[in-house]
Image (cartoon, rainbow, N blue to C red):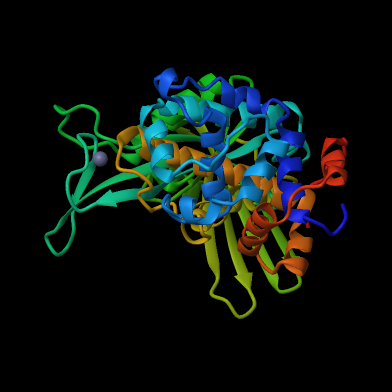
Length: 436
Ligand SMILES: [Zn+2]
């Protein structure tokens, strides 16, 4: 790829390369609008919604100020299969998203993830060459000082104030070299007005896992879970679905398992391994087949000593077989990679310019749809960053991923794509992931 319009070319190539059917999928989203009054095609509104996040505009009113450029409109028309004379206003986008069932935008994401999995893009990066690591974790999304809808969760703050909020539970596909791709989302909300308890991460977790199984029935999954999920029901779900799990384990979660682990450790001295490298030393110990209410679980602990740092202790519950050959991988490529959902996932989406906690809308459908478009945009960005652009090149040429977004905006707005570039975009090339 030559030095001209590199980020723009990378962006378009990423969509075309990984998702050749992308526009067909977008077209199949049912349009809720009165067809006699439509000014903007659905595709033009969806690409505007994605650009809102890809270009890190931060709020929907910025669309009007940042994207109203004749060159940008012409560029989009040259590479995407739709005609639109203008860039839609942020309110027009909000109007559309208020009428689209979020299930449809979520399905667009499912089709994208399925395509990546079918193309075996991530097969070389599976845990123990077999399982896709899917981390599940909750995070805050939008919150309001006044009751916003009947489904709001509410809590009393220390100062007595009540806030109304909508958290989400995310399932992200974690790749060991740093990607965290949104696989599915469960919105936590109170749907039963007669229920005595509010919705919770655990309840949302059960709904989320059932949906993942129905959407990806054949996928070999290893769940990466927080200690909140260390319970019998999760063990049963994993057994029924033929999934593996690695759960952060706190003694208080299941005291009987913790007691048995401590009692059996001295009796099994062969289940030990020390790993040392440069300034790190890790001592592993494990006990297999501890019975918990009819489910056999394995427990792995790791005591880590790093130069100039406080020692750290980790304990995991797992149904993966533990041996001296795999405990290092299960701990470092599995259990400890779970935090990537927090870092590469939520932190980037909150503080990396995507503005995850900003209320892009107050409409109940649109709030979710903006969230889902953010997730889809983040999938595209990560594929571009780790794929055709490469993390190393981004650091050298642009300094940061945020700067890539600025450059992309400039290239979209100020330089018209020429015939030579368009020809290059039609060429098939191989894309490798920069896993360094
Ligand atoms: Zn609400």
